[in-house]
Length: 119
Length: 113
Image (cartoon, rainbow over all chains, first blue to last red; front, side, top):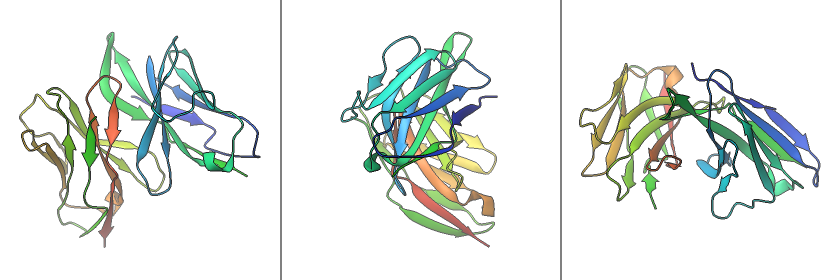
């Protein structure tokens, strides 16, 4: 299997607070994970690529200091939205590439997403 | 930069009939992967089918098949014998580099009983 989980599934927070979202690969190792953002009725936009043991690579226009990514183990990546504001409200989805036999597969497996609402 | 275009924002099909979703892409690369993902109301992204660009044979997964035209940079998805559970958003995706997946805008498919 290739199951990816996210926690929490939804979170509501006050403006100015920080929120941490976890992404876990449950039954495989993932040296590379991805964080996407999806606005209502829109496509997925890649925010950053998370590599285990190294700094994340952010897409153009994504604020590194606002969206902190940590990939401390082969099964866990976290996204922290710092000083969240209402415009950060969105659906955040993570995905992971499976490491099989020492080779990264080309398929990304997606988590169920986290709905963030900032009041 | 690679771009993925899905020109059909919405489509509908009668149950048991066949529907084709269109996707075109733009790239200068020769080796890449193409995917169709399904996103039902639960928002969980589900892989429907994948195609390696170096393979000439079109991929098939049960009721789902693709028409991959590399020269035309076209990658359409055909759903045969449509079922109510196929109702979802469908995203076409292109992956060139190892960490570079780009999605199209999506097509909302409704299967009518």
